[in-house]
Length: 64
Image (cartoon, rainbow, N blue to C red; front, side, top):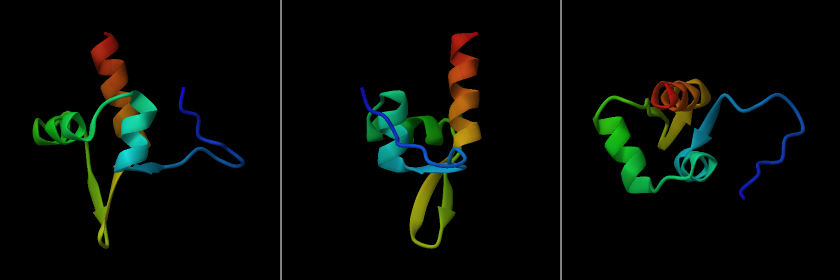
């Protein structure tokens, strides 16, 4: 099981690889969800990050 060490407030966003590990999906599945507008991806400079709120909303929506 992948765990992210937390020493402060939870992250606001995850790098793509970290987001994939956090919810147990592949990179290609993550980008498919982005393409289908089920998950947000934000570009900051040259880096792409997935907002934590977007991951939560995805998981809550699929669980319903």
